[in-house]
Figure 1 (tube, rainbow, N blue to C red):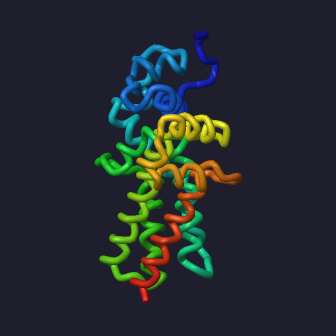
Figure 2 (cartoon, one colour):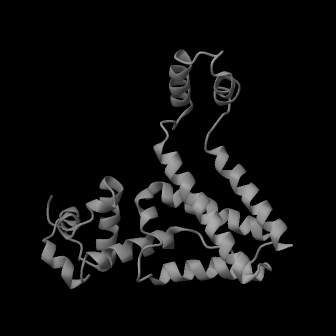
Length: 216
């Protein structure tokens, strides 16, 4: 890789670390590998970041910064949280390696702190008690993270892939022995317009409606 002509900076280092993690997971982030991504010597990174932990703290803050915060004005708190949840899912789908780090860092950055404070403040302003706000954040974020992980592991990215995978399963699935699985595949998964991604919005609405009932 030819040497970079753009001046090295903390932001460039963090962006390079994110690219490294996107390609090889968080375990691929090392000072040497990030330096290779930038076309520089590893020692030059230490002028901008003290160590690998600082890089990990920084990349997680970058991920949080990419997630949309709840808008300052809204008619229904559920719409505000729904928009934030869809944004979080989109960002984390691109950087699923970040899921294991988001709640484990001991030095949260400014974007991380702003994000948590904004979500908590929105729930408190909507009338949730402090304990219920904590419950709401936990269940919503657990749902987002779990869905992202499940979606990433499924071999179903396009309608053609759904047909291929479902068809292969049906070929070895005796309908008399597994009637409900057969029904699910034939009458649901293989129907026109089926998209597993639609399950995210459905599940999220169930959670938000249940929380609204508790809020009242």
